[in-house]
Image (cartoon, rainbow, N blue to C red; front, top):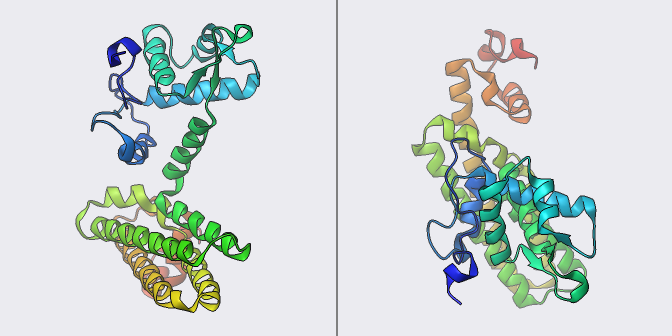
Length: 284
């Protein structure tokens, strides 16, 4: 059966006409699906696709039918998001890619179920938009700590985890430094949610390395490299925050800082700035 006959193009998860309005989460969907996408155009700027996927997910979650739902039931519930040809096009893609699976058996004829894997992907997209990839690194550190404590990970597996975290941190640090040193301030403001937990990340990394090194001394060198990378990331976050603060001072636009960053700036700001009509008159 050809791709046209099957009703969808392979890997085309969010195909559709680009809409004028953008959903910021799609900026994180693209790199998320890139490792398994068949073409560079497999994700486009149409926020309706993601909104419809969420609406279908919510419909299945609310109705909680173990027999599945018919196409007409799904269409009726999702009509406020998409209907007619727009719904038909996305429905075919979702079925073709397995987000919606047709239930087999006479009693279930013409009924569909929602894939839990797609539900997990929606959670990841939401989390990436809110906290970026740093949150995933924190999650990996936590999972590794639990696995070590429960004796579920071998020395080789732990070595692989240390390498993975270090490499991900290295990539994140390089990205952050490029933002700080060469990108307009608007891009930094867009990333400010993603780099608020540098102290927690460094603390998690130190605790994990200490626990691993005490049990597997041969991994101390790998642990040290991870801590060095975590310190590089921490320094990059400081540089990031410094550039934001420079713009805040220049523009007197304190909305550019999140509450946590605002408080840190107030506590660490020079005395002339605090008493010169700067931070103190804005509620800190």
